[in-house]
Length: 151
Image (cartoon, rainbow, N blue to C red; front, side):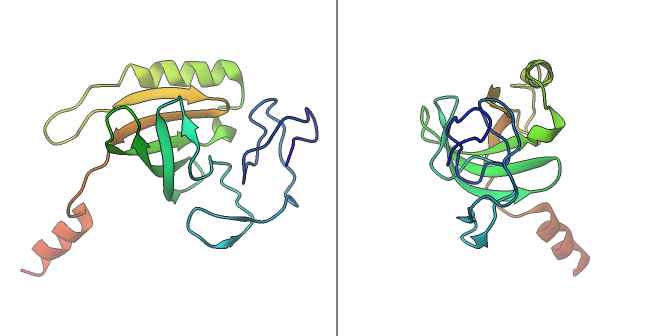
């Protein structure tokens, strides 16, 4: 599929053209979403297998809301599993805004402690501004609190 404005290629499921920023019409063809369900993918996020910033390979979408989408991704440099959080492109529509947000987020990279791991990276790719965090494995806070409540 290609953009009707600039004729540039569109990523599968894109809602905004990565080259010119034009909206992709809602009647775009159906795609299989990262969760495996059929239907229009309105998240505008990158498809499974896409590599952002020549390093972070998208594996699956974990969650999405109006502000951000979170993906489990693979760090091709360290072979680690990470969480990549994309800020919704609608929130930072201009190139200048994306640069400003990326700069502010980059200032937080590496800040953390033993309870809250720091960001690994902050970058942008086309219309996407994103941060990368370690993928934490273990019990969720909700399950720990529920277990304490039942004691």
